Length: 53
Image 1: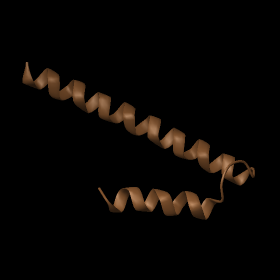
Image 2 (image 1 turned 135 degrees about the vertical axis):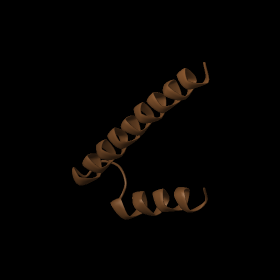
Image 3 (image 1 turned 180 degrees about the horizontal axis):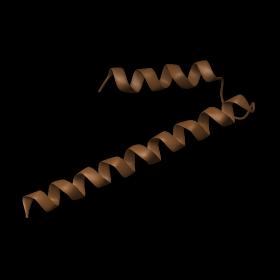
């Protein structure tokens, strides 16, 4: 039972990581295309989120 739960959690984690990577790549492509904010602002905010974790 615990092994099955661990496998489910690992699969969910991998799926979440893929979604996050896809969103970051999409945002980066938008920035390159001139949409949205400046890439420096984007990466400063991203750095801030992960430094506080």
